[in-house]
Image (cartoon, rainbow, N blue to C red):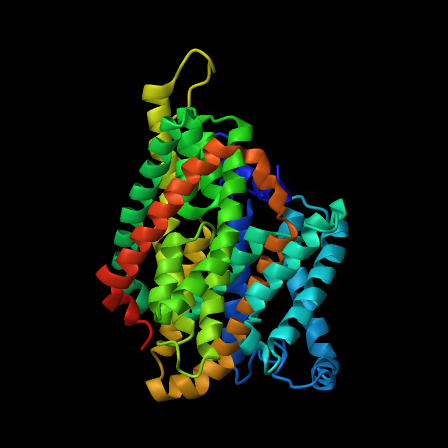
Length: 472
């Protein structure tokens, strides 16, 4: 089992094992804590903005530099800001993890290292020549993490700070503050429709390929959901729903993580080679990536490339992440609960055998138990900023609201994403792929091919006009 498998499986099992073990409190898992942390940041930013202030002092990030002396001077002159930012993040994430029963004595030292390395990555990506060498922060963080994790054995205590899904979910809630609610309503039906087509096609291609290769139907179903919904949590939720073997779920998670990392590099490269706009590329990434964090990394990398391409890539840079989020969060993540419920019902009524002696109980509560709660935070953040923006003209919004309210939140979002990308690299060992066997790999790869092709056709041809509307 890969390090990434162990970290992510441990996180998700409590919320995805089924209705009997699901805890219903609003402070009971990382999903809910990501909602409260993200909304707290937005409310504080709003309160400061309403009183004539701003969160800009705390939301600090390296400025562009040409020489190492400039880079060092930029960090040294803002060390109180960076110290305060670390303290704020440590307090927010640490509080949530402490309530969930994690050790702060392990998390805080690990997070300190993660923060410092993320700062160095930010500085490297702020180099004026970085775009020439494709040194965007997401890819740089991931690449550095992969090199370290595959050459050095990290201490066990350090794993406590590598909270991949926690960081990405907080980042997605903060992302809601940059997406107006009207945009969600406009693009939401398109995203859900496209996600439905891709989800069904990918699941059945993997499931039937797995069956043809002789895999157990429960194992094939877990692989199918992992590819169809594109997520580790989805694989774990479906494994609990059909009562699959633990090792089957671990293999599915490993394949999701490995293919997700591959696509981080492949999709932006191919999108640029094909001349796709930022929004269309973001939508394609949203239908073809295999994890939220990996998809955000790929979309943000493409957006950063557009920002530094001098008009060579069409569309607004932020449209890549916006389209990805609408496609993945609004469209695909809601399928986690649906697939878990459907498969629990199928396992109960059709797959139940005397071998296991255990029946999976299908219950309407299954959908709620599996539903990604951070989606609520994303929508609420969008609604709040939409309401604030309604009090301003478009010109005043761009002149006043964007720099003093939205921009600081976007900076904090980028920090959270960088923590996540670095954590992915540091928890992934590529040699774990060899232990999965060729049959699961072949079945999952069949779904990858279907996923990428259908996602491309829908994003680039069928719904291109909708997605290009994001690119302005």
